Length: 216
Image 1 (cartoon, helix red, strand yellow):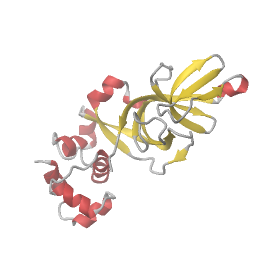
Image 2 (cartoon, one colour):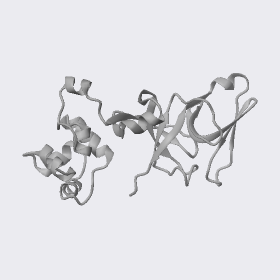
Image 3 (cartoon, helix red, strand yellow):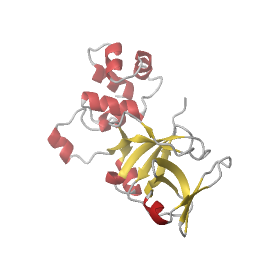
Image 4 (spheres, one colour):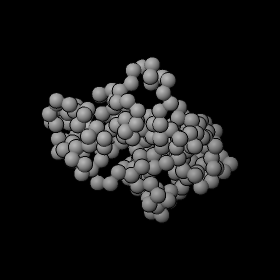
């Protein structure tokens, strides 16, 4: 059974329009998925699993039972693990803090991939706004952050907050200063004064481990 067939099985007697409305996609998109012309992305799969109580392993990989009761879920060492999407939008430009009202979303990752990177409980996904880290990280990308990695390492990219702003930058630490560096040469380094009371305003949020790009 392929993904298209599994989607039809979940939909059952519902019309495509009814099913599509429940998972917040257009009916035409569902039609393409069911004809095998395209694959649902991880966000759509996550929504289907949440709404219909379907196992992510079964929907995405075709392994295991379609649905699991609570005891089975506790006993099963799933190949997939869900990482939540935070409700803040990281800025890779001006450093502005934006709000994403959809704070309940989670996305599936392979468990072995996450285990190589660290502990899932410390990880969160956030969306990037701005072009200062292009071409490595583009406007609209989603980054995976490890919030336990708070030691500044030269060359690594961190989410860092200063007062009411969040930046996605490389960081150089100097006595009394933090220098936030962009990749895009159009953006000069930003120097933060950490002396005195300002020292408490700088906070490392986490290190970027992975970036996802959605092409439109």
